[in-house]
Length: 353
Image 1: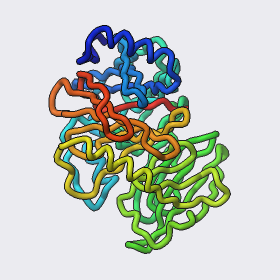
Image 2: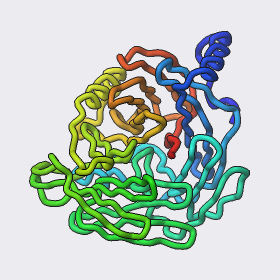
Image 3: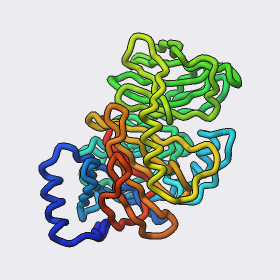
């Protein structure tokens, strides 16, 4: 897609940036998702959070129809049930995307999508299971299956969605997040009422077996409206994580994470939400934990890179109310590094293992 990014620096510097992007090992590939209400496009960029350099291809990775846009108009109320957040920007259709960062792209959709070179299309039947708005979503994709959930206070349901059908699994508690790793599905759920809740970690094996463990240090808290996403073997929240790779899962506060978000919030003068901050979605990529979402304001999109749970660098995409916007990169201290003009995306897709 020609004209995706227009540099605001001299041409010589652009050449140096391209050379730097080819030699560094810190580059993170991302897909930007665009929609005009009838068609969606996926275009690749590469971001170096250490230097702030962004490189883009002139080619669109994939295009597909956008007719299933009514499945989600109120995701935030289901994620944050105590608050209502107006959705000011286009909802992403319920076509879910899996991408491994290089040559494997899978689309899960209710639509009859046109087959494209290098793109695997999985036709699914239920249009309401995968709900997406920006990077807030109740589903996670692999190269063969889509996993989604419905949450309630007492009993919640996880759905394994494939071309052959949908398989439901019910668990006790209100689901906070799901993740897939090493053929196992991990589910984090809360149990209890008010400030007397605790977290449970469910592990669902490929044979359908279910194991549950109480998360240590998670008792006597409130998780109403909490939302966690899975990265590097942990469920990350705004200020804590729960490990799935230890014998006994533990709730671990992360002040370094909140310190990083304070740096990010200080880099913009946009009006904040004014109440509970929506938690970003967390992803893992080669040692990085990436926090992605509409995190500090209605009119911005944040992509932040953490290593060892400490901020390395971030980008802000703002404003979101037009056809073009500015992507600005920053270092870990909040110092502005580079600035680019891009089309306004509706989602940022991070490679998944």
